[in-house]
Image (cartoon, rainbow over all chains, first blue to last red; front, side, top):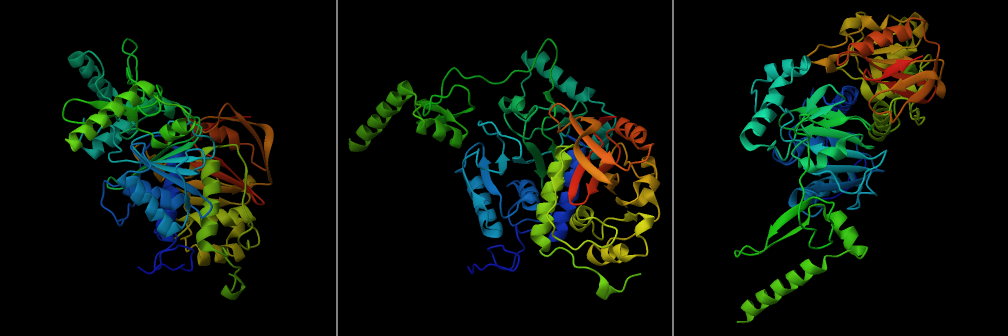
Length: 310
Length: 198
C-alpha cells in the first residue's frame, strides 16, 4: 500500500483528512450543534457509507471524523478495553486517515471513542466522549413505528417506558434491564445511553466532558453537554441501583470498577477482571493487586502445566 | 455587487481552519457563556468581523439557506458569502437555516425565524449575531445545560426587546432558535436550552 502525505495532511493518499469529505463534515457539524442545543434529542443526519460494516461503529467514526484535528489525542475503547478488535481497528483507521496521536491513557486523550463503556477514570472538562450507538431509539422495542416514537418524544409522553419498567417489577420483582438502561436528559428527553451497563449510568449525570452519540445505520446523532442532568428512570419505591460484585478484580483488586467474568476452563473456574483495561493496568502499575486471586491463578496455571506435562 | 476579482480569500487552509473553528464553536455551544477566540484564518470582507466570517465559512454551504442582514446585501460581504459558501440567500426568515445579523438593533424579532417543530426541533434556524462587544463578566446571568452553576456575560448593542424575546424562545423548548454571538475574533453561543436573567 502506498502511504503518502496528501495535500490535506492525511497520511493515506487519495483521501481527505479523517476520511470524510468537507461537505459531509459540515453537515455532521451542523447536526452536532443542534444536538448539543437540544440535549438528548436524536438529530437525523445523512450517514455515509464507511469502509466497514454497520454495527462496527460507523456512527461514532463519522462523529469523530467530523470533530478531530491534527492536535487531538485519540483513545478508542471497546467494552472498556483498548486492545480488542473494534478498538484496535478504529484507532488504526484514524492513525492512517488523520495521522493523529493515540493513547490508551484516559487522562491524556482529548477525544475518546467508546463502544459500550464509560471509562472508570474520571473525565474532565474539555474532553469529548464519542459513543458508538447501535440503536438510538430507547422506545424502539416498545413502539416500532418511527412516526409514533417522534410523537412520543415531541410531546414527552413517556408513560409507555414507565409501563415497561413496571412490568419488569411485576414479573421479576425488580427492574431487570441491566444495560441500555433509559435515562431522562435535562428533565425533557428520554434517551438511550447506548448499551453501556447501567453501572455507568450514574457517571453520565453532570459529566464534566461533552458526550456525543453517533448511530450510523440508524442515521441519528445526539448529545449531552457537560454538567447536564442525566437521570436513570425509576420509581420512588424501586429506586435505580447499579450492579455489585462480591469479588474484586483478580488482577488489580479494584472493588469500584465494572468487572467482566472470564471463564478459565470447563470445570467452572472463572475469574473477574476490570473491563476497563487502562484503569486496571494503571492500578497494577501503582502496585495494587489481589493476592488471593493471584494465588488462585498461579495454582490454576500450575495445574494446567501439570496436565500439559503428563 | 462586487466583482469576483475583488473578493477576499477564504480560509488559507479550508480543512484545518474549518475544523479548528468548528471545535471552538462546538465547545462554545456546549458551554454557553464561555468566550472563544477564533484564529485569524481568513480575510473578512467589509462589514463582517473575523469571527462571523470564520463561522460562516465553517458552517454555511449550498444546503443552508441564509438570511443576510440588509446592511450586507449588495455589497462585498454578499459576494464573498456567495462565492466561498455557495449558500442560497433568502428574504423569508422562516425558510432560513442561518441568519447572519450585523446590525442587531434593526434585526427581525427572534420569533420571525423558524423554531422547528415538536417532532423535528433540529430544523430551527441558527442566528449568527455580530455584536458591539462580548465580555465574560456582566449583567446577563445564564443557567442551563453545559453551565456548572451559572455564568455571567455582557453583550453590547442588542435591542430592548431582545431578552424578553429570548424568554419566549427558551420557553418553547425543545423548539426554538440557537444563537452564535460574535465580536471581533470572539465567539459565544446561546443554545435554546439556556435560561437568561438580565
